[in-house]
Image: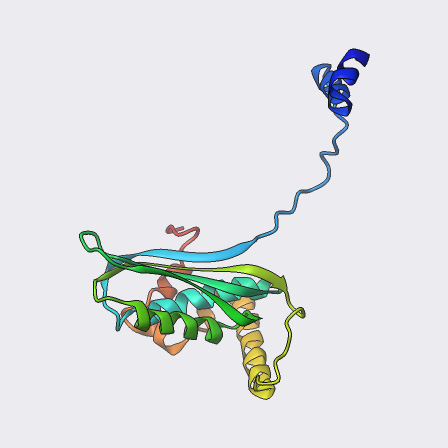
Length: 198
């Protein structure tokens, strides 16, 4: 063992112990993974036009923001990806960094629809993906002098109540009105388990 220690240092000692079946690692300690991003993507069942995509975006932003709020986190950056149907060139990817971290659906949705209407080039849409990154804990955000604090507080209270209802009853217990239109996919996706019928 001393020869291994001389050549490899502490690692040499560890190699000797492992080769003899000795390991002092604690296996009782649970590894709790930390999420560095939260994402939602979907391959749509048919081609969608630009008029139908905001409904899909609302469902996706609601889902990722709900998961973010359940972790008591805020996101600084959003990544939006819109893919075109097979046989078409197009689609886009856009990254946006918020002036202030957020976990509100409305903030995320407005950014997504802005880039959709700005960057869309006319081809049928088949994939939608949203991810939130650069996560920080709630309470670490800086309040701006230009924010409407009263309006923001109202939105946060409403969001908390909606989250409590979803958590207590089900994700389909309270939805945005457009989620009940024929082009929406949120209600159907909420009945799936890991993206598949249960």
